[in-house]
Each structure stands twice: as C-alpha cells, then as structure tokens.
Length: 272
Image (cartoon, rainbow, N blue to C red; front, side, top):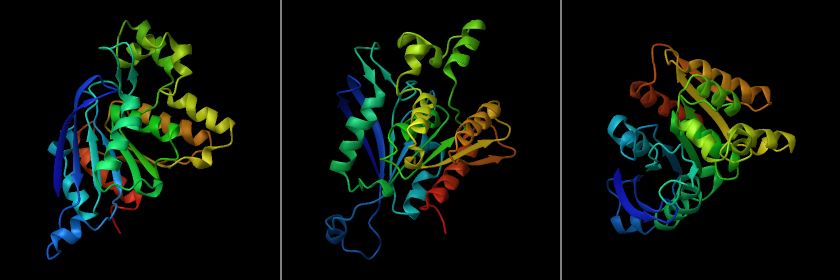
C-alpha cells in the first residue's frame, strides 16, 4: 500500500495537525499511468484512535495496512489529542475537532484523493475514545456512512456519569466537556451527546436512516458492563446493533487488531 502522512494547518483546530492515509497500491502488471489516471474511486474507512493516542497508532500497532491492501480500501486516520473528537471552543482559541472531521478533513480527502463520496462506500470505526466518537458521528450524520463499528466504546448517560465523577471527586475528559458547555442540561442538548441525538431520531421516526452498527469488546475489559449497557440502550430503542464479545481480551491492541477485521467483514469489505 501507499502510506501518506500529511501535516497541515487546520482552520478548525487553529494549528497544525497530522493525518495518515492509506491508499491503494499499484497492482503488479498494471500500467502506472492507466492506474493512477483511471479515475476510479475507492471505499473509505475513517478510523479513529483512542485516548492518549494519535494518527500513527493504527499503523504502528495493527495490520491495518495489510487489511486495506487486501480490499483496495482507503483508510484515513486523523490525530485528535484527547478531545473525544468534540468541539472545544474555549481551548487554545478553539479546538473544534467535530467540525474539523466533517467540514475540513472529509472534503479534503474527497477532493485530493481517489475517495468515493457515496454513502455506500463510506465507513467509520474507532476504539475506546474513538469508538465513542463513532457512535456520535453515526447518529449525527447517518446520510454519510453505510456502516460504523465501535470497539471497546460506550455512549454515556452524561447526567449519571457527571454526578458519579463529581461525587467521587474525579475529573475526566467527560467532566471537562460537560462543564465547558455549561453543565449537564446544556451539554445534553448538543450534538456531542449521542444518546440525546438518537432519542430525537426515534421521536422523529428516522431510525431507519441510521447506518448499520457493529460493536465489539473484550470480555476481560474493565469497562465491559458499560459497553453492554450501551448496546442494550440502542436495542431497547429498536435500533439493531450487532455485538461481539471476545473471551480472553481486555482493553488492548491485540483485541483491536482482531476486532477491526470483524468490522471490515461486517461492512462487507473484509471477507467472503
């Protein structure tokens, strides 16, 4: 495969940022000019790292290049710091990662690379923090993705989560996010709250517009109960979620390398 590393100044992040992009490789025996100038558009996987990670994680710690090469798949892997892929308007002059993904990175990839814009050719997946973001993007932009995969990732009831963390004297990214938006009630009304958004879709009778959803977790993950509860939350709203729990694995890269293969198979681009 061809691996492209871009470092560029982002309007929405107010500074330089990094993204790795895997591109289909020239097949043996094919004329280079015919291949590169043929105008073919390829399916795209928008692939998110977890907390404390960056754009290099999936390439360094899994075989994602091998899997992409097997299926002529473009894979886009941005850096997100510990932002939860949300907008942080009061950080550093504005670190608006939600808007960056939708209004900057996606248009750039579609315009500069042989990436298909068609919904049926676009997929999203992420692990941990990146999986939480995938739930969010799936329900906010169902018209953009055919299927999404959330690996070791819950959605939160932010009122309960915030009360729990404040009562325990803990501060996490979720606590900071809620407080930046002015409290639980204000935050719950935003598009950053996946549960609030999906309830609106249910009320509007629009859940049939959602992409197909896949979730996976290691059975030894210390957060596995949260993952199960998230799947139950969606299913109780009448939204199908295919869930796979794998014995013997925790919150770890050995699991995510297996799980991304399951995700590709679920998408219909990762196996027979």
